[in-house]
View: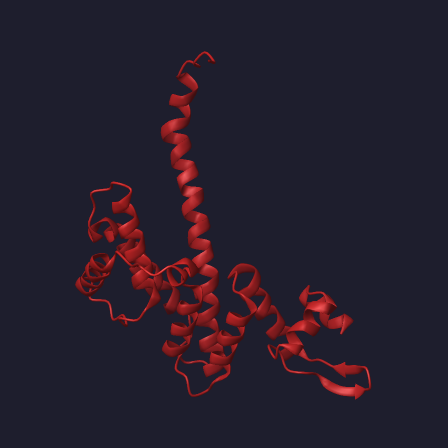
Length: 218
C-alpha cells in the first residue's frame, strides 16, 4: 500500500477510502493485512485523481463515470454523455429555470440551427439557457446569437479534441482517452480564456488606468 501511495501521490487513507467505495479493485491478498497491487491499480488511481482534482467531481459522480467506463456494453458516445452530465453546472440542477422556458426554447432552436446532434435532455442546454436568462435579467438586450462566436470556437475545439482519440485502438483506451480529454481540456480552455482576458485587459486598459489621475479621497 505504501508503494502504491508513492506511485500515485495519494495518501494511504485516501487509497483505502477509494477501495471501500469500490472505485478501484482490491489487490491480490498475500497475508492478513497485505495485498499486491499492479500497474492497473496505479493507472486507475491516477485516473481517479485526475477526475477529482482537475475535473472537480464529487466521489459519487466519479463512481458513475468509472462504472460507465467499465461497462463494455456502452459506446464511447454513451460514456461521454455520462461525463457531460457529471460536468454540468450543479446550480442549474439545484435551481430549476422557473421563468426561463422561453430561453430554453430559444437555445434549443439556436443549437438546432448549428446543425449539432444534441439530445433535448442534455443538461448543458439548460445551462446555456440559464446564462441567457440571467443576462436578460441583468438588462442585456441579447438573443442566443450572443453565443455564436463561442459556439464556433467550441465546435472547432471539440472536433480537434476527439480527433486526438485513436478510434482504432482498444475500446477501454479509446473511451478513457475521450473521457480524460474532455475533463482535462475543459479545464485548460477555462484557464486559457482567463489568461487571454488578463493579457488583453492589460493591453487595452492598464496603460489608460496608469495615465488617469488619482481622485482625492472623501
